Structures are given as C-alpha cells and as structure tokens.
Length: 116
Image (cartoon, rainbow, N blue to C red; front, side):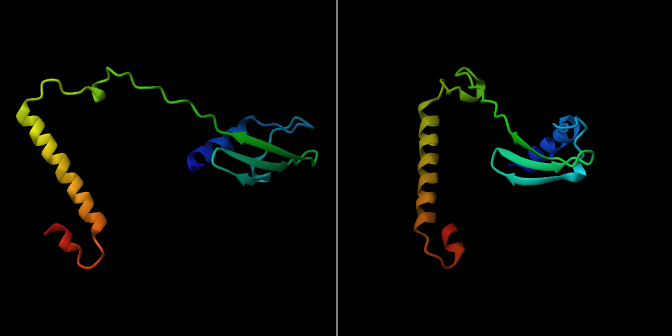
C-alpha cells in the first residue's frame, strides 16, 4: 500500500469513526496499526471514555481503468507512411533489437565495449 493511501485511511478513521460502544469519536493517538497489506489495513484503538478495544478494517477501493477508445490520438497508426519512412522505421527497429541482443550477450568486463 502506498504511504499516501495509508495517510488518507488514517485521516478518514480519525474524522469518521466512533466507538461502537459509547459513540465517542475515535482518538488517533490511542490507535495502533495492527496489520497492513497491499490493499487494506487493520487498526485497533482503546476508547478513552469506556476503555473498550475496537478494531477497524479498511480496504482500498480500486476504480477500474477506463478503456482507451481506439480512435484516441495516441493509438492512431500513421496511414500516410511512404516506402522510405517504412524502411527507416524498420531499420531503427532492427538496430534496437541488435543492441538488446548485444547487452544480453555481454559477460562483464569493460562497459565501454558495448558502445564501440
């Protein structure tokens, strides 16, 4: 869980959670974090008014990412590509593959050898 999510959860607990027994506000200095996970956390606190221990479990809500429409500008395929532009693009793609292969085959030694 990211720290800013954890801070949001703690702020929300301090502002919105009340003791289930006496209905007094949860006081954050008396709260302990029992467990934290990837998308949730558990806290406990002892109410200073009635000395009852309570636990609060919080779970992050994940909003589903909206799919990007196919007509979005980022996904447009260049239609007016000349034969020369296609050759240049193909050549660059092959150069990148070759560099990746060379890096994979590199067995240590002088790093400058990769760039000669």
